[in-house]
Length: 303
Image 1: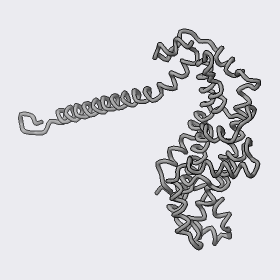
Image 2 (image 1 turned 120 degrees about the vertical axis):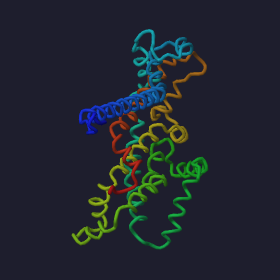
Image 3 (image 1 turned 90 degrees about the vertical axis):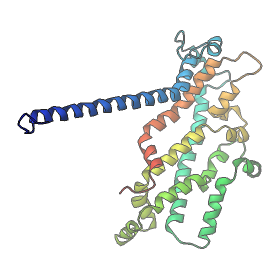
Image 4 (image 1 turned 180 degrees about the horizontal axis):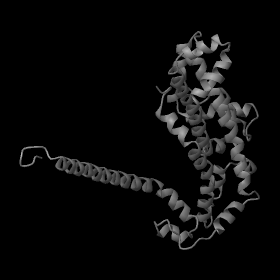
């Protein structure tokens, strides 16, 4: 923009740049608004089942089956109180405690055994390493249902049926190849120069694992623990096969037992107890969300 003498007009250039800047800011605000609106709607639809469960726990049977709204007509905690008492001689606290008697040992054992197994495959050379690794990967394609009968007969011969042992003892032997494979990929991406530097400093193999590698793959280890925690909390088939005493039932079996098909089912009580059963997994996920996302999105060291 020039004046009558052909000279540049500083005020005109300033106004033009200001207008362009304001237009870019407006476009940026509009794009951000659209993006966050879409994300908010998506999050709402994803969370709607949980919101509906929360609302349904306060509803009557007729209201549950006649309304899709998650807002109940009134708030009444009777379903939670009666659901916690249950219709058996044991309260829901017993089933909760039984669940953690299975989940906690299994999570601890699977983390330790998977880390050690992955460390062996990722850092050491030994006879038949490649065939053994191939067998490990092949087990990923083996449906667990195929091994149900052999393992059941094994525990029966060991007189360990109707105990928690069959549900957590296999974790000592890194029975989930998925976790081992994931940790191997993390460990392979860590430079071996770190191991060599630790050896120069006087560390042995165990110290290299505990002091160098484990802190480095912490997000992956937390991811393993979180996955195993949620899967064990939701396990239904395992306890159904091996546990036969009501006093030893976890929450997954207790919820199924509370559905009496011969009488009138109080669905609000079942939904209320289902929400309580979900709480540990939800709390664990949001508590470890930072490490979980990092463990899923990365495959080793950051540059």
